[in-house]
Image (cartoon, rainbow, N blue to C red; front, side, top):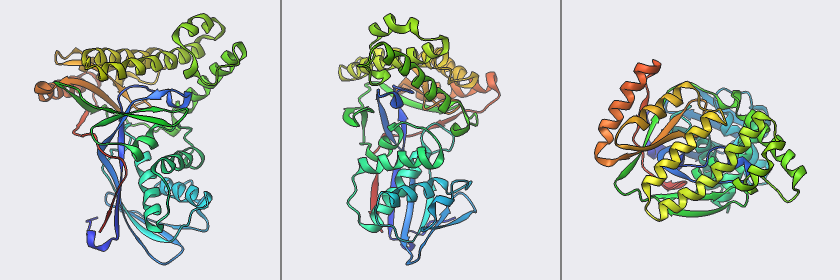
Length: 376
């Protein structure tokens, strides 16, 4: 569908995100280091004076109508369930809701691990806020979006994706404490290196994957460790030193999951120091260590992501590469010398196809603000 902006009242955008480091620790109370991307979901919207929310897409022929009095009934929609869930939690929170028309234009690739779902939820909520002129903060939008994904869609996610989508800042990473929801913005200054995003293009669906299983395993680990030390409120509270003493109490796979979380939290701390001090080579090393842990201990990579990261790491201009996002498909991020990005991408794409049979895809994306609103 073609977009005629003069037909609409507002243009509301929210970003996809890339996580530089700190994977699968957000739901364990850890700190993460995401950045919002120039890849966005845009909602063109206008009030329509009815009790219905009409949704169309620029990339799909479907048209969905939601009755705002029966928003709980749309969980099984193939298209529109994220929007329905967002409207549902908005209304359940006591905020005003009016009928409207929405046109969705999503540039965040679906299934890429760059959080198209969060971008859709956050932009939908931001559009509802804009149409009703309701004083709700971007942080509250993020929390409502997380609630929609957890309670409506059925994905037991942490807060990172929605927070990054809503609260991103141009040219900055976000050191987000997922336990306190406190954020420090870190200038994303990588010197002679660029952040390169490549999608392994293996189809995946996180709701049907082992994501929720991993969360359950970390909860089991926490339960066992709390029996030994009641002062532990979340896995992120446990230092590597303490874990080495307590780990014999954890059974095999549960111990592996906890070990990843605890050492990944430590890698985030080291990564932020490296960025602040301009030690980009050290940051690259931490990316490699993160991927190894996600593959060996957390088991959320698979053959394709492992192959893509290994190929990237083998290129002489690459100082570090790892999967980003929840895994089971999706993207890698790599730190690559700026003057060698084109050669790196060509080498990685061709080598990956030769090894796996899939055709990977390079995404050209910058670091952006999160929510933006434009009156048309």
